Length: 224
Image (cartoon, rainbow, N blue to C red; front, side, top):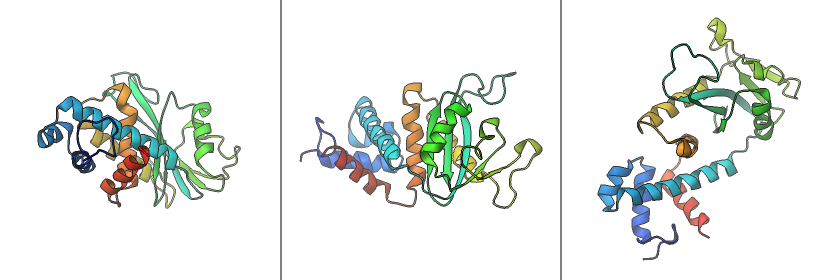
């Protein structure tokens, strides 16, 4: 049976659907290799292709409309080095994220947490009529001046983590989920970190849907 999902492959569409099903159930590559009798390198290549399509889909579909948006950054990588603290900690990958309450999250790897780095992402994704929640990091100081008139801040520095609706618990919860998931890989190559991050985003955003059926649709459309 021809493989409509991955052109140039040497196995059937039926086997690819099995691999996609196992991927959607978050089965690791070694186990999928054993189940399908395909080599681990072959499964790794298939997983890489799937993650590339997921990343593309996330970038295309992540447009926020007006709503309540939480903004935050997080740091991924090796454990903190003694004596090196705070934003920009050495050896960390910096990820910027925004979460629309009751809806989806969007993530992007950034070089730093400066206003020049973060503001273009915010303006591209968030409507000016939205209610924006952040912590007190200095890069968020001018959001009101840039048109975000409903900007509320939680003061982590004085142990304030929630004041009614004023919090960023949603995006912080996502960071926790993401780090637990990525930890199971026991180290991720810098070249593929972005793809794994987008997979976390995808699984979170569509956690209430049938991920397998959605992935089938994505892979079919990719090969049209």
